[in-house]
Picture 1: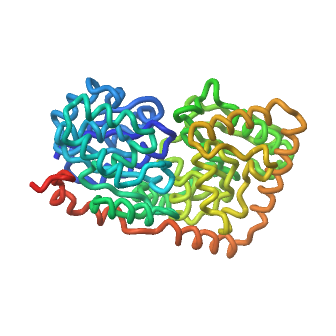
Picture 2: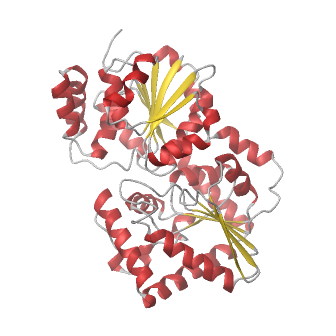
Picture 3: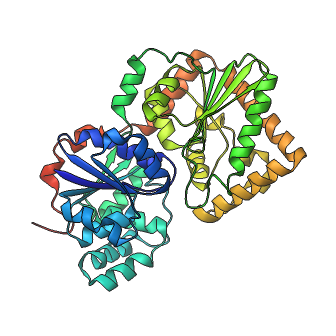
Length: 418
């Protein structure tokens, strides 16, 4: 079986899921086309793919050759690739870790009707119907268009699946963590790295539709300053490792007796460090939470980088991990952002930039984050274990390996009967 694949270039979440899924397709060849942070991550995990090509799935000319050779398309939150695959009559498997997150003012019945237009209309009409939807609605449309789609569990996901099913999409399935089980199991059984960090901080891929490493990057500056001050104030943290896509070129600094390393590790190496690090901090990223639960690690949730983190943390309120999280909202009503992915993310970037430039505001933030870290470090082993169990109860679901075991028998495109 020849698979043509891509993943949405928003952080490491989508592309890390694609690399996690790839071993589940035994004896398949898997070609990847993508850009930006997704392409960078894929190249660092080239052993998971047969061929890696730079390309933009919004451009038909960049995907036409791959579609012509493909038996199946695998898309992780890349709605554009689903569009082209459906138009080329190639079966599609669609994977989504954020089904409860996508915003729409349209009913699912209307989206289902639009899906039929995309599937059956002429090329110009199909493209017009697709392009008039918001980016979030295109993801929901991709679920409706896919041959099979898989939604990773989180509060609100089961209800969304029920709504999609009622609209005629009986092929959408709930699944458990879309993570690299093999690498996680290897991390648990492997010996610790030669130098285990006392504090491991994971800032993820960071890049998305607005955030980047060069200009909209105030969050990175804010956390870097806090880490530098933390190292000076707490020499007992002998080694702090900060991982993320922004640190493709490793940099090591020393503050007193504390070594700070900024780096981007191959995912397998990162998981091995996570499995043995006594302290772990990460923004409320769902991929990171799923991995932490499997490794039995309770993280301190760092402040939100973008609007998606706002909604993730909101869903976790009332749990131990959510109530102990560091959130910008705790700093006052000025940090309440618009309920919109782009505008909410823009506002967070602007507010974070103000924290960097205003010394009094920064000091208040640093003191608050230090208090959250101190509270996290005071948790007992039993309290941490209970919090991990509580979180795991929200994230569990059918194993993806089981759901994909006989998927080849169910690849009649959605909306077709033969």
